[in-house]
Structure formats: C-alpha cells, structure tokens
Length: 369
Ligand code: UDP
Image 1 (cartoon, rainbow, N blue to C red):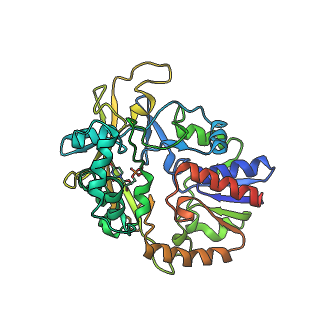
Image 2: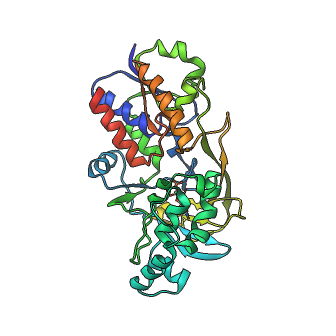
Image 3: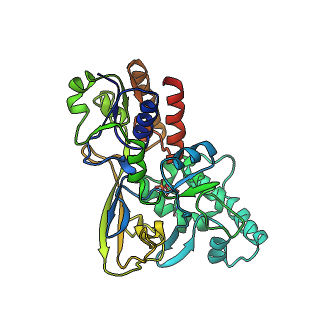
C-alpha cells in the first residue's frame, strides 16, 4: 500500500512526490504519457534539448523557490528576450526603450513617456478588458502592432473579451532592457528539464503510460491519498460542463544549418501569420552542446494555438469570467473529495508560471506532509 498516488509527473507532481519521499512516505507516481515531466519535458535531438511541449524559461523573484530548484538542476544564465516580427519589421520585447525607439523614433525616456501619455488618453477610467489595459499601458500603436494580433491568435478571442491581467505579465520599461521578465533569478536547467524532474523523482516508483481516469477504481486502491494534477473537470467527468482551455500544436523541423533566426523566440505579432511564434531551441543553451561545442544543426518549432477539444492536450486555462465561475463550482466538488489533493495548472485551473507552481506545491507539502 502506498501513502500517496501522484497522478501526473509534471513539476507539481514531481515535487510533491519528492517531498513526500523525503518524509518517508511511500509514493507511486503515474503518468499517462510515455515520459515524465508533463509539459516541461525536454528531449535531446541532435544534441539540442528540445522543449517538446513549448518553451519554458524558469524565472522567479522568490529566493526560496530559486534555491529549491537549484537543488535539482544547475541553471544557465539564459535571459529571455523575444523579438517581435510584425510583417517583417522587428521590435524588441518586452516594451522598453528599444521598442519605443523603433516604433516612434523617440530617443529619450521623456519623449517615450510623452508618446505613451498622449495615446493612453483614449482610455477613460479603469481598464475593463485586455484591449483597454494594453492601450493604457503602452498606447494604441504598440497595441495594434505588437499585442492585438498575437493575443487574439494565442487566445482565439477578441482582446475586448479577455481579462486584463494577462497583459500585466509583460513589463513596460523606460530603460534599454530587453529582459522579458521582471525576475531576480532566471535560467534554463543545464541538460534540460527532464533531467531536473528525474533528479526529483530519484528513488521513487514511476509508472508511465498509465491513464488514471480510465483505471481510477483500481488505482485508488493502491494508496491512502491521491495527488491529482490533471484537468479538474476531467476528474469529475465534465459533469458540470467543460472548462475551456487553449491547446498548442507544434510543427517541428530539424534544419541542416547552424542558425535559423538568431534567437530562441520570435513572436509573430500580426494576425495573418498563422503561427504565434517560432522557437529555435538551441539558443536556450547558447547554441552549444554540454562540452561547449557549437552545434551544426538547428531545431525549430512553429507554435499554433487552438481551442482545446476532447483528446487534445490542455495547455492554458482560459481564466475569463465564465470559466472562473465554472471552476469555482468544480472546486467545491473537489473540496468534498477528502483524500484527493488537486494541484498545478490543470488541477487548479490557473495560469501558473513554473515558479508559482513550485511555491504552491511547497505550501501544500508544508500543510499536509
Ligand atoms: N503578448 C503580446 N505580444 C507578444 C507577447 C505577449 O501581446 O509579443 C501578450 C499576450 O496577451 C499574451 C501574453 O502577453 O497572451 C502572455 O504571453 P507570453 O508569451 O508571455 O505567454 P506564455 O505563452 O509564455 O505563457
């Protein structure tokens, strides 16, 4: 008999298992995929650690979280600086003096501020949706060229129908600083995320290709308690209705050349280009293998965003009002499941970054272990 059955070997599940194991609990981890790591899984292809389920850049302001993940991986000095491509015109991200200079020709922070001030006047009162929030942060020009198309492709919804918090993730700076995140600590685990998860799961029994919901009754008998990191609505067989998710599809290509786009991420911010961004994975590790040799080939992923439908992988919860209300109802049901902990992006239906996931699972461990 196990103390805990952990469903899902992503970041939340792996850390819970690791901490429970440290406390002497008997833990079984299962995953329906053939690999561990959930959506942070990386796979080595031609010497390149490919982020198979989308790019993940670890960043945090939380020293405890940073120290925790550093126990399981060595992080490199990667700093995310995506480039925006709007119909062939390139802009620096996030929105900073380089962006303002390219957009308006302004040179000083005062000039940039004056431009933004002039353009944000059209928004009266508190912004009520993403469009208003974006214009009030950076003005209409940047909204039209760098935000609107990208956001509508990523979410499949009009910016007027999206919550404003999504855009508050992006810094706006009056300095020349292309660091996408406002984070004290940032990096990519050397050797890939899979190795980090392997280290967390060291000494713990893991069974892959096991679908929990299909074999629930039988699997529940194996443990006292369950930690469930899958979609909360699926757990309840969608009985209150479907929560909406965005899914992502990747078109991958191995190219016989050393450099395709010169950066890890290029966002295509116009509406017409069907993909949202192209990731060139080698640049997460500076184009080198672990011995420091230049890699001769490159691997790219074009990312297409789509509405989730049953059978797809869910990636992003859609935290608008309708879905938040439905989630609240599922959460009530979840609270009645006495021996089950629901956690992570899908279990809590929250647009968690990795560091928030780590903080959340460590809190949970403190509470229950
Ligand atoms: N965003 C944008 N233009 C960009 C990049 C991001 O407008 O070039 C906005 C957009 O609203 C998006 C949000 O910022 O939904 C978060 O994007 P990000 O790429 O950071 O999300 P991730 O997929 O990395 O979680």
